[in-house]
Image (cartoon, rainbow, N blue to C red):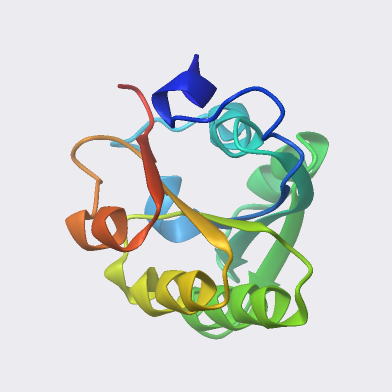
Length: 150
């Protein structure tokens, strides 16, 4: 169903997808986001080749373990999560390692990396944690957008 909502025909799902999740902005109590739902949104546009959740150093160890159990590569950074996520995403885009960049966030800081991907011919997907957490700037910059819970 999500494939149809995004306008994808059968056979277009072979795209290599890099999923990057901004943990501090997505995994908030007010959004009640399930990491499996985030994964499903990205999987709807292709085959996941990178599935990363970015967290800051204050993330509870239980969250790290749960994310790893759900198949996420967890990146914990002592610096700014946004910077690390954006640099890693830009690296995969410029290396040609992915065909689709999926960013789960509500932070407009990721607009430049979506724009870079588009300039490089990489499709983009903005995944919002909920209607309240949706960034219109990210939605507008991405080729496709999904709001979890809609």
